[in-house]
Image 1 (cartoon, one colour):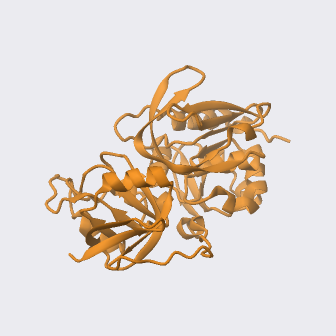
Image 2 (cartoon, rainbow, N blue to C red):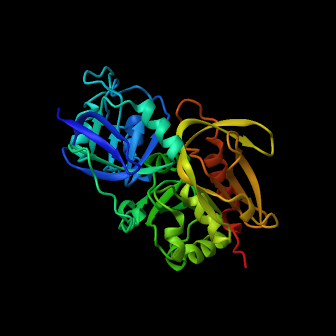
Image 3 (spheres, one colour):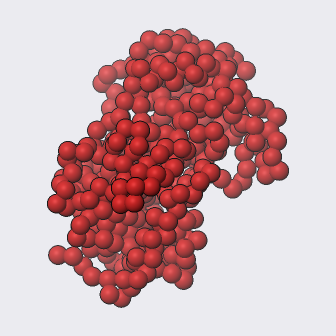
Length: 358
């Protein structure tokens, strides 16, 4: 392994040994606090264009299996870890973590003081980083961030037949776990590109619509807000993560970027109706601004226990609900699995009596 460097745009340099694809890479440096699930994390399309720092000190100890990829090909810009395990032990393991990165064309760096790096990100806020064999890097302020959703969304409609209600899954960078959760509930699922119009979705005649997670700034999708609003006013709708933000924006709310985001498998969220706290999996850098919510239109259903940010919304007139966290992800507890189940039950119960809102 070659010696390499992660250079932050704020000037800090972190040394380590390069792993995975041998190429330079520029990306937004973020961190994830999960103790397990590294395979799911590196294949989550929501990390498109980002360099992930794993807080857990050893990565690769249970290898990589054939089941847990969340997408066909990783879209992240790079990986930063502390200790790399090259001798994995698990009965399902078919590959090493480092080989997975190499085959996917993703560069990484191991042997980094990730504790110091995370402390740096927490004090500086999320910054760009450059992975390379060289210590120096140029960061151009004029660089325009690409529309990452466009890079990870499906290009064609896909259909999965089942016996239950028909759900259209709008793909902003969906995780395979969302599709699997719907299929396990008996749903027929049609996956459509992120820019599919209201009229095209209406022609598919679904019983409900789910707006998926995805990468990037939700405001980059501003030209689609009017279509999203029409879709949600006509069909029972669930928004997850980016989908949550897009629905809020479509109804006039605002979003803002967090200093270093929520990324991990143990974020406590309070359900305001019951007062119960749920442990959730999260991966997002933006949140809906509290003061921008019209309380005569939406009820706030969940709040983050740590920073009180909005974690869920429910429309007071239309069957629209949103969550900032991932109810389909089960990093140990499955506290919020009921959200998807309730959504499927809701659209199944409406059946032929489903009505359009004017």
